[in-house]
Length: 128
Image (cartoon, rainbow, N blue to C red; front, side, top):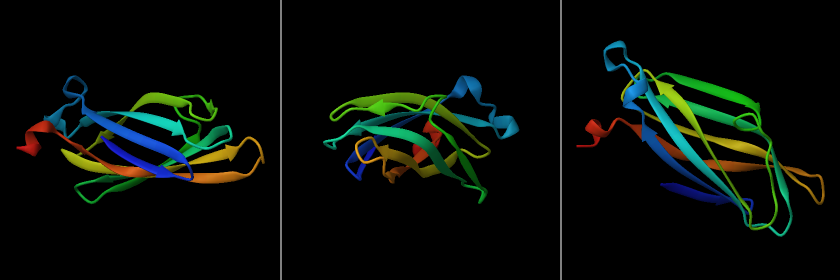
């Protein structure tokens, strides 16, 4: 698990290889990731947007951007956690992701960015 605190918000990431949804002979490798967002601030926050940088070990790079996460824009009170699971497909057995969330301070209505720590996606047989 990888964790990072940025702007008073802790982001933790766990990754899982999905062999049942992968096809190595066709260079299709599917990974799931579980993200936990915890608000350590004294004010409520709302997640508006996500921005991802996805790197495949063959040198390809993608950016993904959009509203919310898994179809929602969660609001977190002080001390509250929000967790979701999503996925990413790669063309190789290894890659990594990093990014940011655009959040709103619900007290001041000010917008700020929270960094998502870089995390690796590696087919388990590659770790030996």
